[in-house]
Length: 144
Image 1 (cartoon, rainbow, N blue to C red):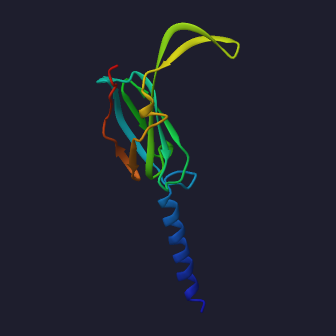
Image 2 (tube, one colour):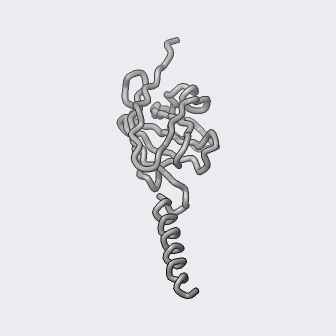
Image 3 (tube, helix red, strand yellow):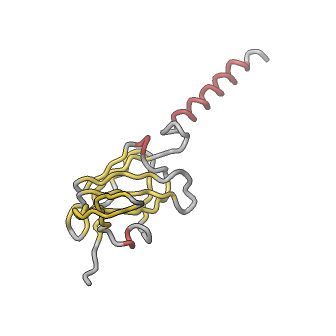
């Protein structure tokens, strides 16, 4: 019987090693690195944010990435979890006007992206473990 102990111990070590390799972040959730571009009416978004929200049975926390000069990127440990993600995109413009919010004067910031791309977004992507070069997000603004 004793000669089976080393084999069992080796198998247990092998399974433990596979579990450790399979996890891409310290929280045990498999994640993917993402990178891509975002434009609004044909112009790269200068200053914004892209948000990935797990949906459709995907579990994990939502993650945000800053958009600078039309590009965004997140490393695998900081990236969205593997699976389907709802995408929200925001772009900010400082107007130069000062406004009072909560009794404090601050510079007004205008949201440039229509709600159909953020609070009412139906944009989705599927994230794989490893690198994910996402297709360009080319947001259209309807003319009034």
